[in-house]
Image (cartoon, rainbow, N blue to C red; front, side, top):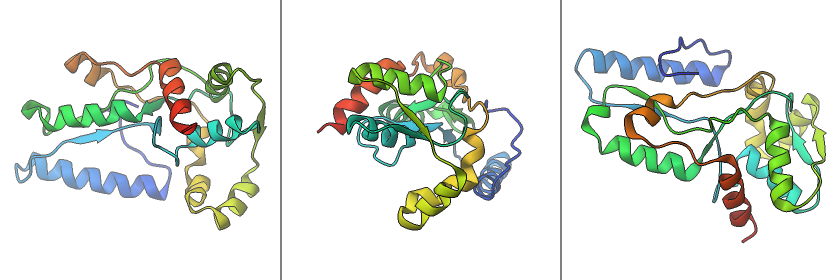
Amino acid sequence: MAEDATVMPPSEKGKVRKILRDMIINEVEKKNLTALIARAADFYGPENKNSLLNMITQNMIKGKKAQVFGNPDKIHTYTYTPDAAQATAILGNTSDAFNQEWHVPTTKERLTTNGWIELIAKELNTEAKVQKVPVFMINVLGLFIPIMREFPEMRYQNEQDYILDSSKFEKRFGIAATSPSEGVKQMIASLRK
């Protein structure tokens, strides 16, 4: 996914996002609004307990299996939360960044979900044990865990490669995403507090 890619949402949540994006862009084009749109991939990192990758890590810290949704052999890029915070601050303080769409720094490494789990296991000095959660179980979990209610609709993001391209931001500002190994190290340190 790049900033100039055609937006064709396959989910209701995505359709709402497209409507909002189109409203903003239309007003920008009419010169009725000065705005920018900053997007990120799924988040991971410190102080981010609702992130899927953080939840996987919490289980692994407890000695449990990494529970995954979808196909763990598909590539999944993530945005490290401190990178997203820094990038949005930079964008908001850069006048010529307005009236554009941006992707904040996101991992360039093409790690699969299994690759992320192996990286986490290596940092924890443990074995990477994976348990795939069936779709019906995601629906059941949604009855008890509010954040899980969103997963069935967004499951497609874990059934195919999910790659967010942030090269526009990186070229313009000279700032790349934190490496997955460093991000995972900081995420684990935060979760252990």
